Image 1: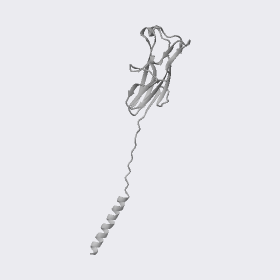
Image 2: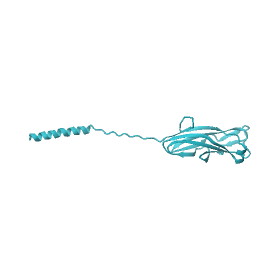
Image 3: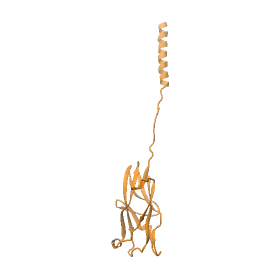
Length: 170
């Protein structure tokens, strides 16, 4: 009987120690969420954000421009996009015109301007228009401008495109 009590006591002590050890065990769960982001900048500016404003002077059309009906400005702007998700770049005009002649007789409507990336042109308007899209990574976008000119030419004036480029995540 003494032997049974000793064995029972030993089991009780051993079992208590393992139960105490189990109670001292803790489980830690670590988790995190990577939020989607996309940022845009002008190439070389080093300032990133969710939008950039670009002002580009529109040159006087040449005889060749008048003959084909438009002025083309290849690589007018280079944008840099960085993102960890799908993104879309939008463009919109900040002014309803490209300017007015010095004598005030001619106003160049902003709808005469189209913006293109990779040869696909989109007409510019006061509301945002998608011009490029991509996946996660870092991209350089060479943006071309095409401005329709009247057959009669453009009188001397102050003409420029004031555009807002915005990047959004999908």
